[in-house]
Length: 375
Image (cartoon, rainbow, N blue to C red; front, side, top):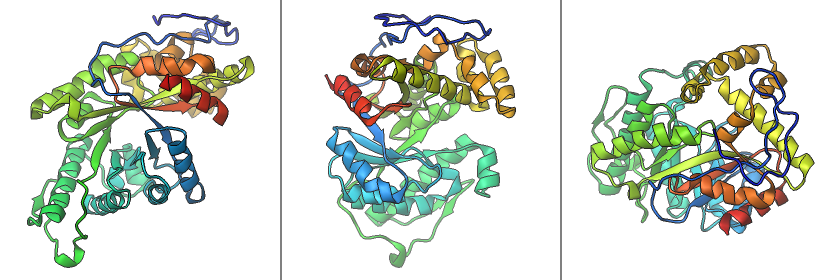
């Protein structure tokens, strides 16, 4: 059970998984982690709008507000194009994709995009890749799906081979099970640049994919539907096993977490944020990809119920099944003057950077939380 402290009021509208009303605090103490990460300052990141008309201003605002990085996601728009504008209107923050769908493309296409964005951003680009799920790859992108861990490993190896050929002038001879790249003439070789190849971060939840990430990538991209317990008991051990297999140093690897945050400047705002967060957790919990996360907590049966309700479109009913214990497992909840410090405590010693997912929070509220985070 999570530890609770500094309770301001109770949420009398929340329901437990049996449907009964429960009382739970609006302020949840996130506890402490054992030190695993480096002692460097925890970086805080924000999202960059994917709409081209908003990308430049969104990135500029993140930099002015003191964020360390800005990420785009591949949802309703391409994740790479907004970063071109972001690079032109910022000078300090890291810029990356979280995530771009690897299997919707091939390594040569992604290598070109990464090389150009790295040059244009003056070395600030991070290439964040994910697999997506089989139905989307086959039915939305019309691309092949098989052996996702092996395919992603090979994708990263192909990227590095291509970038090495461009950087060192070595002959490109990459032959794998899924990808082959053996032609690279001067006409198709981009100009040299003074920056290293982009860092490659991989999104992973399952143990096998996560272990491979620790072995071949420069960083790990977490998902909001990953609890503190899953991070400590599953994710970090798998990453460290992968690093050990290659003799890599933890200090040379970045762990990035996404954490849902429910906060507000008054009770009404806080209650709205909590309700939205419960619904978001329920939505993620209905997805088969996150069943193992729920099973770790003994909530495997809840996934089946949430999945059934999602098929019926019963979104409000799904949110009511997320009780305070589950809310505490997947989100930082509290008043705006305390939630920033709680977010920092949640990640300290484990993550190197965090991307807070604010639900129903105003820009002023986000800014206040960021200031508390930095104290």
